[in-house]
Image 1 (tube, rainbow, N blue to C red):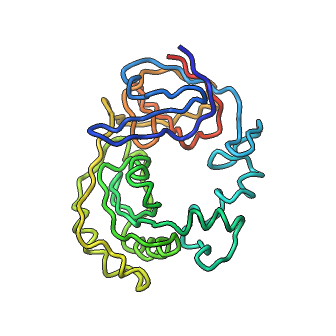
Image 2: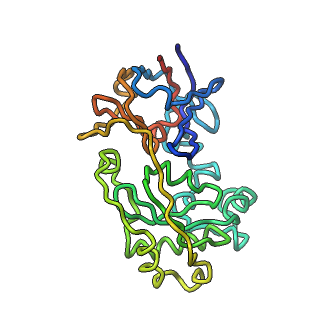
Amino acid sequence: MQYQGVLKKMKTENGDEIQYYLDMNTDFINMNQLLNKEISISFIKYECLNCHLEKEIYRQGFCKSCFFDIPNAADWIMRPELSQAHLGIEDRDLAYEKSVQLKPHIVYLANSSNVKVGVTRKGQVPTRWIDQGAHEAIEIVEVPNRYLAGITEVALKEHVGDKTNWRKMLKNDIEDENLVEWREKLKQYIPDEAKEYFIENNSETNLNFPVHKYPVKPKSLNLIKTQKFTGKLVGIKGQYLIFEDETVFNVRSNEGLVVSIDI
């Protein structure tokens, strides 16, 4: 069976085991059902997720001109402390920026390769944690806008990491941490503007990924260079497909590639 479509990050559904779905335009593939099966992925062409033209992808699934123009690729996406919609100040499109920035946001701790701090919209919990491959996470602060979440993250990352080591995460070379203790330890560093939003009483969320075999030495697949890859799928973690030969493929970092998948 063959499917074809433009890659977008896999949709997820949390449960006893996380379920992964790949949207291939006219079909949804439940990727969990492909575990222990051999699949082939072939690169066909590029397709920008915004303008849908066949243009080389620059970042985040967008061509270069779209990346520097559209509001959902602006700097405040990656650096929430730059958000200004709460002041009525436009970056690229104030209506869009208000629709995203002025919603409740969560500052959280997640443990994927190590304990890290991050920011996400409240409605993206636990999706954001799943995408990062975190096996445990906890909310620290719930604030009414993205700016407050951003300045809180900036303050806390002086005392805890804010990056994931993808190799360590995929190897499952991780230790369980007491995130409640981490939350209490970091409380003192929350900026004054956000202190009232500290979450006093909550517990960790634990996440179970569908992985049958973790790689010892994961090697990243460059599909554009390789053009086609065939292998047995043995796990899915974060946005990575893990194959038996220890090749790993990051679906999210390849958004905007039109591929065919043969099962």
